[in-house]
Length: 53
Image (cartoon, rainbow, N blue to C red; front, side, top):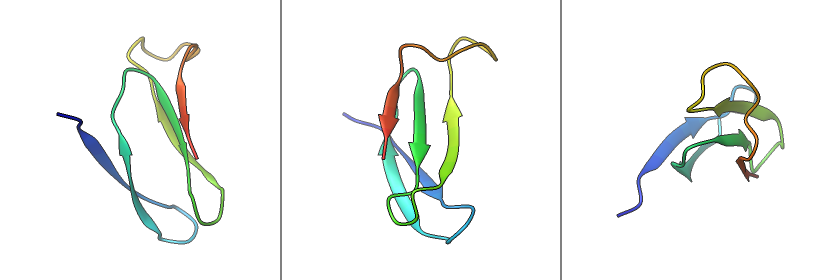
């Protein structure tokens, strides 16, 4: 079972879903703006990570 997170773009209000994983960054598929990131290791660098665009 894959879990998804619902995201709303900060710039254009487009709603989209991304699959949850340990470390990931996400960008709006419509306007290509960076919308955020989540990291399991705290506030350090998130390498390696998955990038959803």
